[in-house]
Amino acid sequence: MESTSPSSTTIDDRVPRQFAVRGALSVPGVLSHSSGINRFTGRSLPRADLRWDACHRSVSVDIQIAVAWPSPVVDVAKTVRETVAQWITDATGIAVSTVNVSVGAVVPAARVTTTDLAD
Image (cartoon, rainbow, N blue to C red; front, side, top):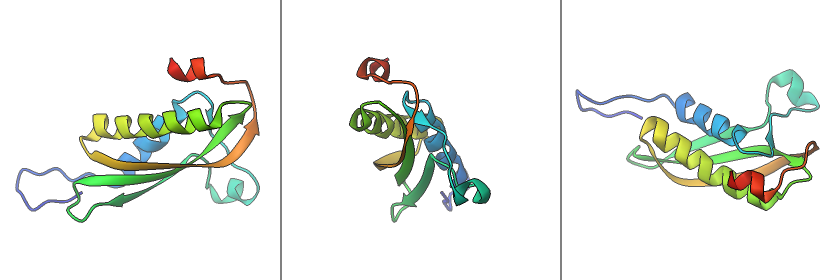
């Protein structure tokens, strides 16, 4: 995020991207996961990509997650959407226009319920 004002603050893309990943991992049912060739390339889930609006005032986030099975996948994704937007805005002050969540893997793990997500 760049501005020509002398009192502006520049935020590197890695900062909101890192808050997106950490926010997603804070949601019950979201796992850190890598498999196959991704283990060797370091491309693990969750993984986030950002797109800035034309004025660099808001960001759209595409985040791919791994979800524990069994868990309410749709509810987990909804909670990730809300949490990621909140974490980025709270930490950086950047407005988040959209968070698109896709489930890249479903991994057998401890059961997660909607009550866990509400907490």
